[in-house]
Length: 176
Picture 1: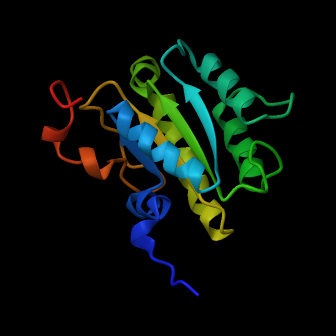
Picture 2: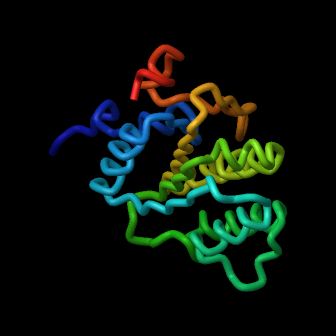
């Protein structure tokens, strides 16, 4: 029987640093999502770049996570529906090893709706912690075209850059 080695488990590394991880380089995000898929994670991809309003965000998240028709399209309703996602009532296949929610172009949405963008990450971080208690990892990957974007702590954890782009010198023009 092989011993479990957390250092070989990318999901463990991501969640150890916090439930929400930032990415600037698309290549690093692709490598990470490919690893997750290879290890039976369900990927839910959302392009936040075109969201011009909170309504757009709610519509996209509801469709991606298969929320029920009665979804209220507000942050309280999002919180409620995420509880059901964690319970795998919808939006998350019971056969998957975990769920990875991948946002691309999140900086564009954060510039238009900074409060909501922060709260969405906070809700996902809080639900990620609960999901881990049930042995169901929820990983949130956030790609930003702004290499200097920062978020306040979410779910009582900081939003961190991935290990390859942790240093400011490792992201931004000239590092693609």
